[in-house]
Image (cartoon, rainbow, N blue to C red):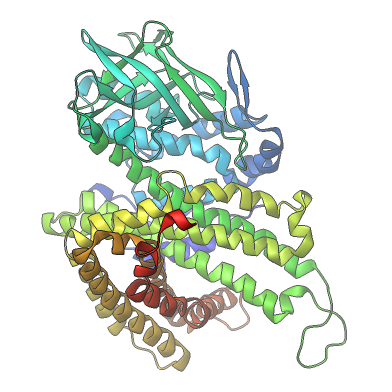
Length: 597
């Protein structure tokens, strides 16, 4: 049974990211720690009581295709009704169209709870969020008035239609066509892997579809983005006739069985009516608005799924009595949590989950500052920083989360391989996270190409300079904490050194950078995670001075210090090997012949 880690999240928000981080944003003048705490408490209740009970049953039942439409697992319709009635969709979106305009920081914290409780359910609102973002930033006034209010209320949902059978990540190869027809277009083509492309949760589905207008330039420069609703919308906002778009099948998958992954056909008859979003041939630019929202959401999925797996593994390790651990004799066998190697695996999970959570929340705060800081110069800095961090959050968190779900199975031993324990589902569900919304390789290419090489490392250098200043301002007489900070600062220098080497490699031959880009992404994630873990340990050390040693809060804060020490001693040294690979291993990839594989 999933337990919402509210105390951990509130510590992350208030003590690591900072309770006053959004103070420079007039748009969030009413945001407060008390408001956030109340919303998170209610989100935790919904996650535990409504979404979590459907986690296993939805996996066993799965979504089902029928000629009349896709049926979601039993309980999903009621859960979605409760989700809408609770006002959860309205947290997002501009207030002018019925949203509450909540900060991304708070939304990220809420998303963790819903995702960990039931990722298959959560994927539907996640894709709707991206569609809302694209409409908000790029839609006409008429399009916003038509589509935003019912989408923000949860009455309608949204999708993102990119992939085609012949065009996976290479969107320049897409063939979906759009033919001008008066004030709209007729769309013809096929899209695959469309999450919640068809379902029975909401009365309408608004598809955001990449297509090429007849006569448009070849490649990505000729791509446009279209709004294609499942049901056409009358002038009074009511639903009209069914559009010429249909789900013809759903995939049989390794995991997230409750989430329908659809093959969509557009224009089997007269063409699906679509409305051009923004300007022609800017579709890829607009789609990246949706992709950034989705990439942050999938990054959350990485550590949220690992958090669920950790809770299950911890419960197992605390109750599974097997043998006696090495060391001083004990009168009776102890739970396996007391065996050093099992403890190592548990704290490996816990420490990295906390590091990923801190980085995602920090990135969310940068997004808020980038859009709403009262100072334009500071907005520019924050946007550059959030752009830098999004691929790290997505790539590092999902790769690490996948590894941790596997560790969770290892803690269970042979029982982890048995479906009845539930440990296997976490791993099956997590496997897709490193692939969709851009594989880890694509995130790494984005990081080194668009975010590092393009500005010659300026955004990264600015972040590392701030980290040095922040850590230098921390003073403590505790030798163990000093060691944590020293290890972090050493790694900041390592990342800076490696980034310079990588820029030089790419200047010589871009393929050299591509050969080690994923290693650089992981190095970046580990370094930034260490920084935030150091801050967490410092804050916990400050707070623990005023807490009774026999209280629950004392144990909570002591655990924060312990996990930071473990991260610095057992996780962070991975960067030594990554540095060697990045600086000296690229040629072993590009100088070899793939034909000999």
